[in-house]
Amino acid sequence: AQSVTQPDIHITVSEGASLELRCNYSYGATPYLFWYVQSPGQGLQLLLKYFSGDTLVQGIKGFEAEFKRSQSSFNLRKPSVHWSDAAEYFCAVSPQDSGYALNFGKGTSLLVTP
Amino acid sequence: EADIYQTPRYLVIGTGKKITLECSQTMGHDKMYWYQQDPGMELHLIHYSYGVNSTEKGDLSSESTVSRIRTEHFPLTLESARPSHTSQYLCASSMGGKRSTDTQYFGPGTRLTVL
Image (tube, chains in turn red, orange):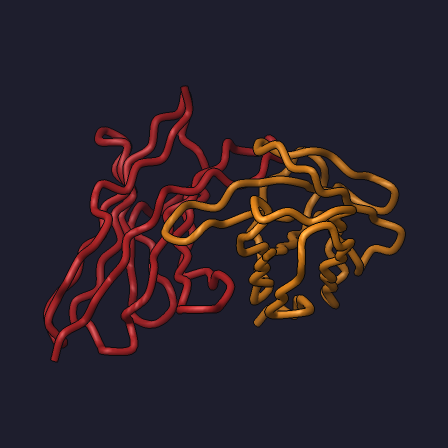
């Protein structure tokens, strides 16, 4: 069955430290991949997406993600976290050119400590 | 930045009331979506539309209904609200044809509480 897994429900990092959020998917072929961020009481904002091409994708707010086909992963990274990065992060996946809506992971809640 | 709006942002109502959650977008997107999100959980698709006069049910069964009379407007209605409908409802839209996958842009959400 098609699925998206975010193994970490909660992550706590110190401000200025590096961050990596994990996302694994299970699909028959390489899907389209997305990372969204949700601040409390808000909707979702797109951080970055991967459709094809370079497997290292740059996004907004200093985030990047790397697609690794062999590991079926699309992990999100940031070299230095800011307190304003505290939020819920969702990985989402969609089969290519299917017109399907996104399948979301359960999300990872990021807490940033001083 | 995407322009997609939802009203109201927060709604507290009693059981049995009829409610309509509004969603509008000014980007001319043909495709629109409604997701339901419980606290600490992933989003589940409950309705979507490919364009005017098109509505489809999503992966998660819902007692709500939707309509798409205008491209920019995709309201969601609950005829008789129940406490089990308490949740956050997120509207989204995207470009592209029926079989294409494009970036979805989300509204701020409506947090519904049914007493």
